[in-house]
Image 1 (tube, rainbow, N blue to C red):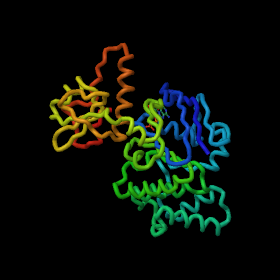
Image 2: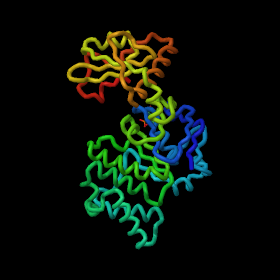
Image 3: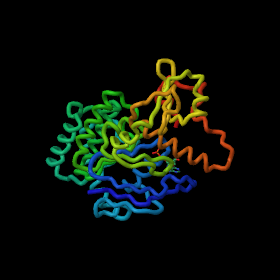
Length: 322
Ligand code: ADP
């Protein structure tokens, strides 16, 4: 079963155009929806999850018309939203049992078996009687997956699931996702490039409500080979390089900055070839799109320096130039 989205657009009442003619075909397996904050990922996820309407366009899940047949969608959908609310005083077992009842699993013996199996699958069985308020971030997210798996869904949507998780918890969560992503559609919405490169067979990059790229992460990385160039520079030289080269990202390293430049030929002798990764692909597409917008903008451009050399943070996550 495929999820097929065609020409989906959404403008909020305040005038924000969150989705612009989005078309995507999403097959079984893990699909990464990658984009910076504000790109429109949650708007798209909420629309697919029947929680909000689009202005125009269509979404089909197999034979189901998602925008019209909402009750049918909900029967086959598991959703882990960004803000996942639970009753903190309840234990994981009690809460999951409650969700199972809401899902319509009325037979208590059957419910018990299902709840136990899900707690085992998400590795929470040992902690099943602990109150959810005492769960760590990673345990809460695994609990979120347990509830999303109730009722054997055909489609699971997880919105920014690993933000705030420590590396071990994130790894555990990745393993869980990749297990469940073998037979059903799992859409992973995230701004973390590594999550997509580690987990997803297919992906899309979305930016300002528009799909910039769709494809297989490995093929996209392959296509970028020979086009990424790197150079280590002093902090003070960043602004100059940004003015003179197509710098797509900059990271602090050992007190200096590694810049990456995208282009078919080596900018000059001071640059060396760099093995591309998905992050390079991601930043290059976003940068290219933003440059296109700046060129079509007739106003004088005050904002082309996306990172101020005087403000480079020690945290590599904050140093990306998009
Ligand atoms: P993402 O999930 O990628 O961060 P969102 O879908 O949350 O993106 O937001 C896309 C754009 O729509 C942003 O500019 C955001 O501020 C705006 N937006 C999101 N929800 C609403 C809303 N309910 N009303 C008005 N604007 C919204």
